[in-house]
Structures are given as C-alpha cells and as structure tokens.
Length: 53
Image 1 (cartoon, rainbow, N blue to C red):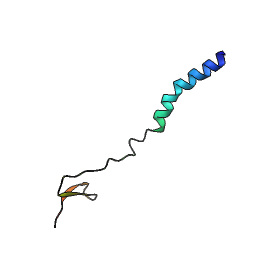
Image 2: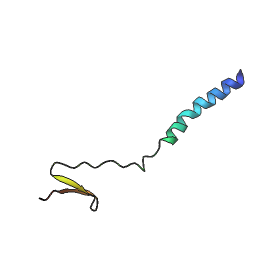
Image 3: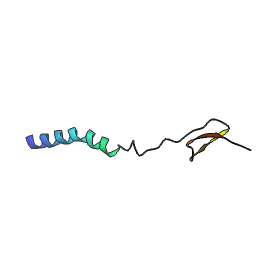
Image 4: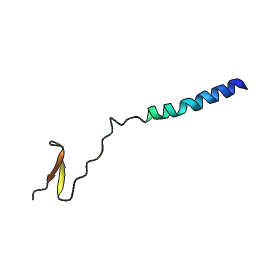
C-alpha cells in the first residue's frame, strides 16, 4: 500500500511540470498581425502600410 501511495504522489507531483514542458512553445508561436482599416501588412518591412489604389 505504501508503494502505491508513493508512486501516485510522485506522478501527481510530476504531472504539472510535464504538462508545462509539453506546451512551452511561446518562442516559436507567432501572433497574427492586425492592421487598421485601409492598411495591409507588409512582411518585407514588417509593418502596416496604406493600401494604394
């Protein structure tokens, strides 16, 4: 019984750390750029530029 309790407590202790490590891609994720009305995103300058007609 003590071994089962020890194993369960270790698993419950390690679970949050493993879950955090699995989803830690903050540096790799990119936020979608949103520009104001009348502008569009230019990837070359990485900024919003007015739409010319």
